Image 1 (cartoon, one colour):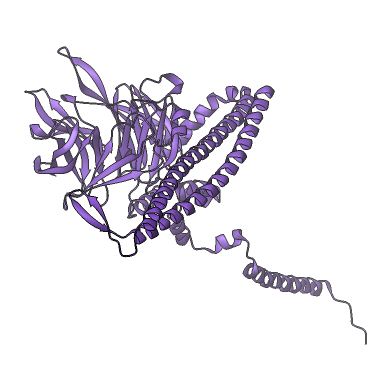
Image 2 (cartoon, rainbow, N blue to C red):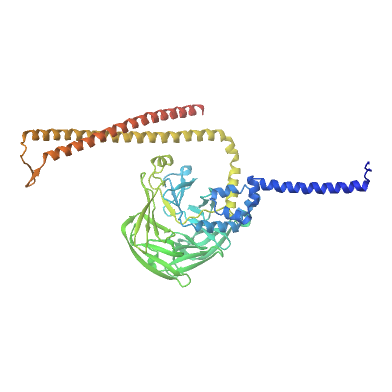
Length: 564
């Protein structure tokens, strides 16, 4: 029986049914493929968003910056103010304290040769994060860390950087005393610059330039704020949205005050303080409050007073006196750690490659401990490379927190891009030259490292030769003693007693025991001589190999210079 052909409306209905069946089959097969697909992109989309944010808050800053390229969603999350606050809270809640150490190569170095080095550490070894050219650190300036950013004032130039990301921007200021502040309510950075103005023949600061950073779509805005005249004296410190520094208020008479700048409302007020607080004082943050460490002597910390501002509105201060177990000379107090210990740090680097120490003083137990921080200009090669000689000023900032980029950091990125755009032509012209120069510089650094290794081996060889000479002399002396003892034993009878005059007393001697002791000593010296000979043979082999490597590197440098 033959089937009759389908009518047009039946064909149309059949096509609809077939299309629906195929669509359901594709959806079913697609679900199976998604379940079996293990690609990172598929797995990433299967992770809940709140879990992604939790993972990102635990990443290091550099990894977080690279993660912005994962997707637009991640980039917007990382740049959001809410995520930045959460990341800062996570970083600051860690039990281990992180601090920064900044120093310049020398106050006598001028121009492009000047460099500011910024190290960061949370352990006993510091890492070099940034090297900023054409910037120095004077004896009256410091580089405090404010909400993850480091600000340094040098003349009428104020430089701000993020050590975690390497972003840097320089701001021209009307004043030569500029400090960085942060408003935690609005998440806003501002710089306060004190403009010197002549009044009655004296230069005192009555006008302030307030620079709002990252505001207005990533740019900057400036505002002028005035206050009654005063003369600044101490370091500047930002605590919970307020910038503090000590000063003398000349009206109606010379009164010591703490100048308080409200970062959010851009208002200046004065806090009364005792006269003793300003003499040889350093402002620090102590257990969340403003405090002043006042030395009893101008250049040392053998004893000091700790003044704590208990009530800001009423200007109530409390005082404690402490005596240190030793005299700390040429040091300052940058603040405290999370345990509440007062930190004492050097104000200058040592003249040679000496260890860098930081002291911690516990006000409860009265204990003072010394901690060495490795990597802070304690290598002779590092000092020669960057010209670290005398008068290298140091600034230590405790409780540094690694900070993610947002708002102000975006402003840093914009300014860095502008600087790159303005110098792109010069960079294109010098591209080949810079690449060859960098290669030669790397080879020269490698040559210095190999030369240092060779010098260490040669020093160890000389030391072992001296030690071998010493043991050889001792072995000869013991051989003479042994011969004398054997000769005396041959002359004596079996029942004879031997006495030795030690001072005014005769002491009975056992020559047989002395003979055994001398032989043991000679065996020990002989074993040491064998060990030293083996070490010398090994050292001489290392010396030859390092000498060959040094010669090869020197030939490579000469060939590179000939090509250049």
